[in-house]
Amino acid sequence: MSRRSGPAPASGYDAPLSSGCRPLASGRDADVYALDGDRVLRRYRSGGDVAAEAAVMTHLHRLGYPVPRVHHAAGPDLVLDRLVGPTLAQSVVIGRTDAWSAARILLDLLGSLHALPTRRAAVPADRILHLDLHPENVILTPAGPVVIDWRNAREGRPGLDVAMSAVILGEVAADGGSPLCRPARELLVAYLARTGPLPLLDQAVDLRRTLGPPGDARLAAAELIRALHPTGRER
Image 1 (spheres, helix red, strand yellow):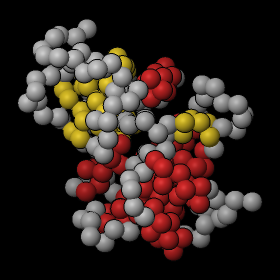
Image 2 (tube, rainbow, N blue to C red; image 1 turned 180 degrees about the vertical axis):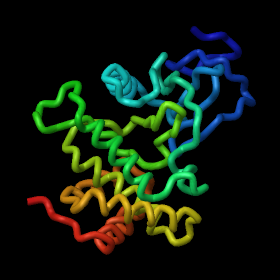
Image 3 (tube, rainbow, N blue to C red; image 1 turned 135 degrees about the horizontal axis):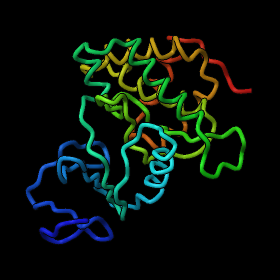
Image 4 (tube, one colour; image 1 turned 90 degrees about the vertical axis):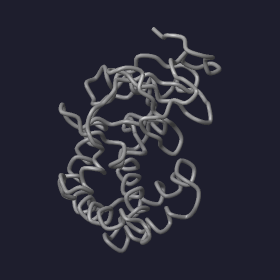
C-alpha cells in the first residue's frame, strides 16, 4: 500500500513523507499529511497506539455514521479518507453558517451517534461517546458533515457527551482574549437553548481535566454555562 521514501516511523505506517514535508493541518496532538488525492495520514506526535480509535471509526463507518474510512492503522498512524471542505468552525467565523444552524449540526451529530449500537457496552443505556465533538472536529463536505478526531471515544452515558461539547465551547467563549470568543459564545447560547439542563456537567468538567488541555479553562467554561443556563444536577 505504501511507497518507500526514507525511514519508516517505528511501529507506524511506512509513509511516503520527505523530511521537509509540511502537514496539511495540525491539532493539539497530531499532524495530518496528504498521501495522495484521496487519502491522508494522521500521525500523533507523542506516539501511541491508534488501534482503539481505528476500531471505533471502523464500527461507525459500517453503521453509516459520517466518519472518514480507515484504510490503515498502526502505531501512532491512521490513514484515512481525505475530506474536502471547511470545518464547521471556519464556516461559522466567515458567516456561512449561523450559530443556531451550527448548534443544530452538533446536536444532530451527537443524537445520531447516540442512537447507534455500541461495540461492547456492559450497561444497556451506554452509547458510543465522542467526547471531543466541537466545530473544529466537524468537516462540512459536499456530502454532509463528517466527524473527525476520535481519540477520546469511549462508551458511557449520552448526556456526558452533550455536556462535554458544551464545556469545550465554553472554554473558548470564556476566553476574552480569543478572537473566537464572540462566535463561540453565540454558538454556546444556541447550543444550550436546544439541550436544556445538563445534569452531567460536573462529570464532564472533571473528565475534561484528563482529556483536555492543561489549565483551568474548563472551570471558567462551567461558570459561564451556569450563568447562561440553569443546570440540572444529577441525582
